[in-house]
Length: 189
Figure 1: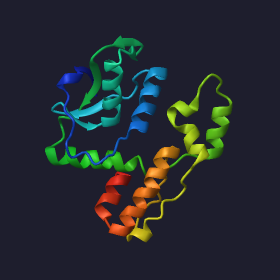
Figure 2: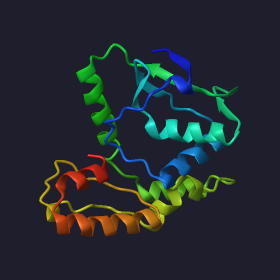
Figure 3: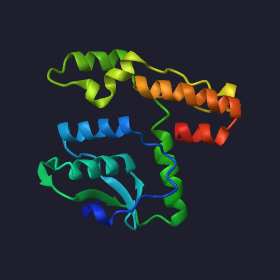
Figure 4: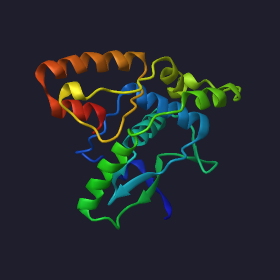
């Protein structure tokens, strides 16, 4: 697989991407890119984003803000490191988009190991990346059974304080309206 640099204006968002990207998440992705560079190329199919919408939004904002972005220890401007997935059929591309988004929700973090790693790394503000939010408000299990859902695998959802409150408010609204499709979309399922 070869990484290609594609001008950001040539990329298109996938209009049926079910993954929800909020302001807080995009900010944390931007913070990570500023601190460590752009290290995770976006998967595209005929220049349409299959996976990496959050990174795309973050990179687009960083370029608009005039922030210097590095990839492979080189400064990049107005381009996005991409991996072409053109070998997939249209159906496979759509299915991979769903699978890629959903598999990210299936596990959490080992809080003890995470704390040890963070304690041994000086000079990093893990709040900027959302990690401290996770330690302060871990959601170990989201009970979907009250919504009539059954899950084959447990889910760990990570929110910062503001996102957690919005989730709780939305969960009440969904429960009242019994809007299963909206709830699944909220969780990116």
